[in-house]
Image 1 (tube, rainbow over the protein chains, first blue to last red):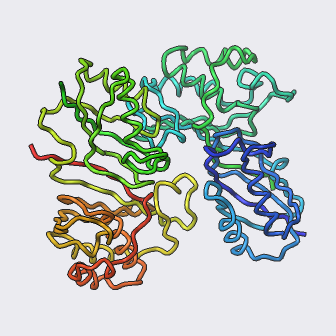
Image 2 (cartoon, rainbow over the protein chains, first blue to last red):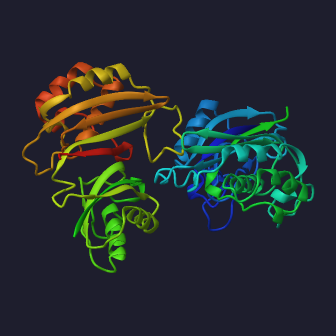
Image 3 (tube, rainbow over the protein chains, first blue to last red):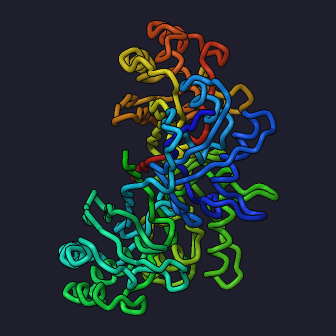
Length: 247
Length: 247
């Protein structure tokens, strides 16, 4: 038995999210369906670093699965990409240690959130960026972002209806980058609560648009209360970009 | 009565092409449906610079329509973009001379054809670029492109089943541009025959991939015979980028 580790990308537009659910098209179900074909009808479990919601994209999701098949690496890459639908691609695959676990052994994740500041949103980016009609104040967003960095109880940035008890996480990087008309938020941390990245993005944008002051961000974090923060930003601006692991 | 001229963009992925046809979603039908709403049920004809096929995109299609409504320019732009589906956007609109005609008065068009040379195609560009697994020889493509420039009978690059008699056209620009892993063909000319841009793109790519010699291009043009040229390149790599008009 070999444990295989793969880095995958997917366009979230056509999926009800990563995780299998009845009567919905999901990334996990497509992966399992293709692995079942490769394994001649045998069901193969697929474990990802974490779920992503409906419409959320990935450019560097990590999965693992076990196999008894003796297929060379190039063969795996080719077979998976031939059989998978075009909105999921396997970018790399390797044999991992038998103890590797895509979900339990993560040491960090990087997400990117994309806004389009064009006066008229392009029909080509409508599923891939969130349009901001007003031009946000980028410096105010950067000032506010500084208050999010570090280790905090992130209850203010966690969807209220979650069962997670320990809401302390560490944000190691939170950058706001301008790329022409695009505005990106890049966030890297030890781990993220449910909707945490989207609530941070939504709150930073409210500050960018002048609906809140940049100086408020520290007290929003401090409050440890979901109602203190801004709205959850739309799913289709979000990308899971990278996952790192402890050795 | 005023004649309005508008520049529009659309993502061709969700359309059976520009022109109205029964039981299909088309760009023209969406435009006419919205104009009918704005005109309180009155049918409004829309004339474009030309048709685009299913899956073909536009970043600079031009249309005209007539109206008796006294709506200011900013109002037109807003009303159309609020009512249109997100895969069609009106980029600009102005009042034109009553004699302006979006189709009959064109003096030139520019198209762009996009290939992706990545080893694994991104799930985000699958509907917007054509993947080339092998890396094409760009210099060979540029050499061949030079033979297409100028005024020729373009019968070799015209879908066989067309009723057009005069197949003489002038190509004023034909560039091959590299942009990271993307490869673009930009072609500008007086006008184009049916499938002409896609047949030129397909033939240039066959040359890039070494299936034909660059030096053959001159004799392919000379032949004035569709069977002399290469395959029609896939529709989803093509963009109508600009349309110019005589004064």
